[in-house]
Length: 470
Image (cartoon, rainbow, N blue to C red):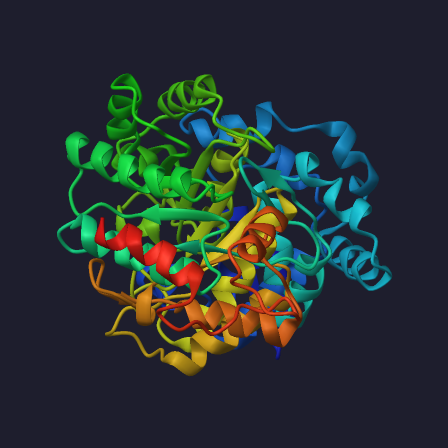
């Protein structure tokens, strides 16, 4: 089907859905690199106008990545729930955008959240392309996704955090010191998640046991995760290690996931192994996935129907369909981690972070963001401050924080523990309820419920610091 629109006296044609979606995408360096970006603002406006008039049902009949050659496309279409789609089945993409904004303005969380299983990634990606940043915030804020293992995440008025205690040599003392630093700052309710310096099964098990001992010793209502490859986690499960969450980076095409060394069957096997351990107390969500715009392009696995390049935002949304299938506790986009080749500057990083959060939440995911950037990107701390506060306003499930905002193992900039406290304070948000109660029991909250400033001789500080010296 050929689609065209005249803007400024010039007629722009979009022969395929792949090209229409790409040309309608707000500007970003990754799409320029892939050769699929709009060549002018006029072409982008023309594509967005055509996209607004496209029936949502089109995405059930016309694919961006072919059904026969891609298991992600098959997963999306084979599990699509027509009943959940029925309330919006007659709408165009533009009408769906308007309906979402009306529901958001009315505070109708049930209407928005109930659509998740009826939406495809391409539907929500298309809708995001028609929205301003404030629109993405407004709808994201009213989309409720609640999950749990040993803490409950995604409740209204809450902002959780992943405590990321990475160390360049996986030194136990260094990892423990970072954990203590984060806990004393009120962080870690989403997960204490360590990126291992190597993918050694022995090192992974040692880190799992270290974090589990701290959680157990102080009865902390949170979960641990060592972000090793899923095959390494399977070996840890076979060895009887205390695995709370199965982690894996995932992407939006079968070929990109193959590049990560994963298949849907492998993810299912690992999830089943973690479920058998029964380590949850308030829920049974045992998977954790990371994604990022540009991951498929960086693996040269970004092509769709007819070999045409698919824009990176649409492929990112498709990764969320993979994650959704495995009922995750957590999903986050590492929004600026891949580099300026994919998101060039602060404006593009902020836009991508809000898009990713919006798309993930609409698809039913407990969506968080690593508000981050590499040191060769045109991004700075003011940009990450802006995105952090916008995501907090948008109802993000969690943010990632590292000591001093500088990850000394992965060599990139993220948020600090104090940044999370700032977001909670400015926006009136609180930690996960079980973790908040633990902070109170540890005398880490003042009378107003804020994390108190502690001296090293305070009882809670002494107890936790003892762990770092043990």
